[in-house]
Image 1 (cartoon, rainbow, N blue to C red):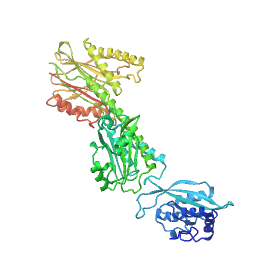
Image 2 (cartoon, rainbow, N blue to C red):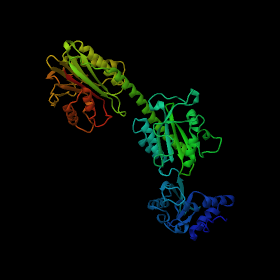
Image 3 (cartoon, helix red, strand yellow):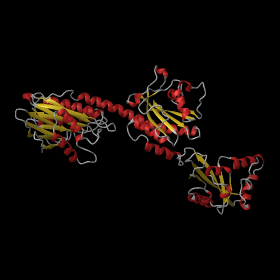
Image 4 (tube, rainbow, N blue to C red):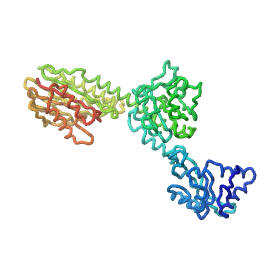
Length: 589
């Protein structure tokens, strides 16, 4: 078949002036170079078009019609806004600017309607350059059209990565972060994506620096994220949270053991490949016409966390090195977020364990009171605080009740809580009135903080609140003192609930006024509820709403304090509160 003529034959326009000028550009080259230039203009996959100085389209190649479906005779002689599909007014403005200034314009988005037989939602990048002959007069503007491979993004690479930074790693939850990576990559980069993490990462433990059979046994992986252009991700053999089978002789283990991505532009299904040992995966590959594979190990700070797998099915373009670079950058950002989440999970687990070990294992109210308590750590997205409670037997059959809250979160707060609980128990042995006990505890706390500063502690204790109450069954009187803490609730046997008006002392560590004690009557059968602020405070509600919520439950009572504890905690607006929740109930016998 004869090659089209760029000067006006099969592939050119009929305008003599403009066409002759374009032809001269080709013919001036001469010889083999001219033939090569003709091939570029007529057989290239790059879309090309030329407008003269009157903004008339005077030449167009075949590739441009394949891009936007507009025939040559519908384009020639027309302005850019008429010769291009969609809303091309902005592109015409660019052509005018290039004609006037001579400054090239690059990377302008062109998104034509879908062309039958071509992938949908394709985006293209258009660049424009002014053409001049050897003597200087302007001939027109040439447009060069290139396909943007990712189907959704025609912006620059930095915009894409910036968007990924905003959408991946929004929480300190490893499973959610993995799912955010998968969701972002589909259909931006792939038609189907999975993210599998080692069990150590999911549990917040230390992963290996290199994963492979050389460690004696293969590590356990769990599916942490998956996304697909098909609803429900039917390509996946495993649901989220399930253990994933990873064959030893597979590209997955190759990526994990070497720490480098594995790119397979074409998935080989013939006999003798690793898929012979994995028939279930092979069946899914055939069923969904998976044709291109990209496996990227997830590593951060020198340790491998898992693997992200990108697959193309409906998108006919195989993965290439450019796709690999983008995938590696996305995975790298996600891996840092995952490692932060893993470290947070590890610290939170240690803090919860430390805190629980410092709380009383069993509560004994003796013959004075029936007691019950609940402790609920903050939600996984919030660090564990320094809440504590205690019940201490005193001489004469009396009973001391304590609830406190250290300002701050994490292991440091839990350790400070342990020191304060020990200090209170020591001071309680002196049988001090509640106000005097808190005054001495305040001085002890200040000394502890000064010691931490002297030792160079990064985050010294910032303060604490506490309520200390002593109940005397002989008189049915309860003596209390507050150090920046919410007052307790008192439920009478007849169902009336009140919050006694008590002197409010400053938090511990402020070193201001001495703490004052106050007495309230607590008839037999009455229930006193000591609690931390996490039980009644909500970020978007007034504290009075929480106090009323607790009072309603206490007024109804229950057959046992254990049941009443459960009923009070169940009134929380969310089962995963933003702050630690501590509740201590005591009923006079």
